[in-house]
Structure formats: C-alpha cells, structure tokens
Amino acid sequence: GAGVSQSPRYKVAKRGQDVALRCDPISGHVSLFWYQQALGQGPEFLTYFQNEAQLDKSGLPSDRFFAERPEGSVSTLKIQRTQQEDSAVYLCASSPIGTASSYEQYFGPGTRLTVT
Amino acid sequence: EDKVVQSPLSLVVHEGDTVTLNCSYEVTNFRSLLWYKQEKKAPTFLFMLTSSGIEKKSGRLSSILDKKELSSILNITATQTGDSAIYLCALPTGTASKLTFGTGTRLQVTL
Image 1 (spheres, chains in turn blue, yellow):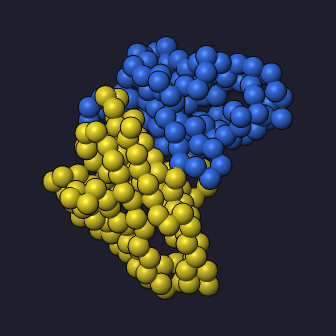
Image 2 (cartoon, one colour):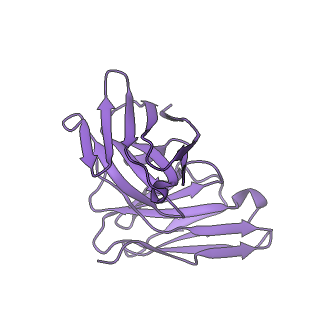
C-alpha cells in the first residue's frame, strides 16, 4: 500500500518568505507527527495530531511555525518569514493508533528546506 | 529531561565485518525502544523492543534491550555496502508518544 508522502521534496526560499509543506499520511492512520532534522542530527519533535486535534505543539521553535490537519488526514506545516536557521529536513510520520501507545511510526521522505 | 545517546557517532568497516551500535537512554516512563535505518531521507523501521520482547532478529540484523543498563545494541553481521546508512535509536516519550531520537550512528561499509 501507499506510504507517507510529502511535498515538495525540495524547497528553496529566500529569507523572509512564507513556505507550506504538505504531508499525506497512510490512509486511516490516527496519529500524525512532524519532526525537524538538522544536518548531522537526529529528528526532533515539532508537533503531534490525533485525528484533527493538535494535542502537542511543544516542539514548535517559534510562533512563525504553524501546523494544521483540518480533516484528520492531510497535514500542512507552515513557516512564516523564514530564517536561515529554519534550513533543515522536515519529516512527517504517521501511526495507526493514538497516544499512550507504543507503536512504530512510519516516516515520509521529508522536505529539504533551504533558506537563502 | 528525556535523553537518548548513541555511540559511536560514525564507523567505517570493511564488507564482511560485524558491527555493534550502542544506544543508551534516560526516559521518565519507558514504553519501548525503536531502531530505524536512514539512507537518504525517510527513516525506515527496523525493530521495536519492549519489556516483553527484549530481543529481535531479522536476517543479519539483531537487537537486544538491557533494561537494567538502560541501553540497547544493534548488531549487524557480515556487513554489506547496502548497510551503509545512519542508524537511529528512538524512544516514545511524553503523553503523545512522540519519538525522542539519538544523534544516530553513521555506518560506512567499504569494499
């Protein structure tokens, strides 16, 4: 079956531009996570959705970052007024069940964002 | 604060060698430990270890969880060039079971 897909795969933005990154999770998956992976580092948690509810946004680095999942499937991560430090790979992951469960997360290929 | 530490940070071996990658952790509420392989972009799932399943094996890869030592190892025997990748260790933390990752071990297998 289809895995997690993300678009675009690569995005170059000039400093100050707004960007929108899309994630299509595996169909029927309840949980959706966004992670940020800087070069040479492991992924770091940004935010979590259970269906359409954003239950945890503690990892969002600033109020320039905003995520939504209005119908409980596709999610969009928006970054306003991009800065050079936002350059990273943004990974989306989904999981079939909800919180307090120990289950593997399935990752998409990521979007590599470069801010010039 | 939840913490995951992996060692070594990088490793170069010859094809056919056996390697052992290490992961140690400090988490408030242990649920499981996961290993992922990351070749280009998407981390791909390898193993999940829990209190009731402390050892897993798949082909040349195997992993063991030591809850007493708060650590896990990932073994790869008879390495191949296709094993070259970053190996990530992660644990679900917090109420959302978000994954807390280590920095990863970059493995390069040469001919």
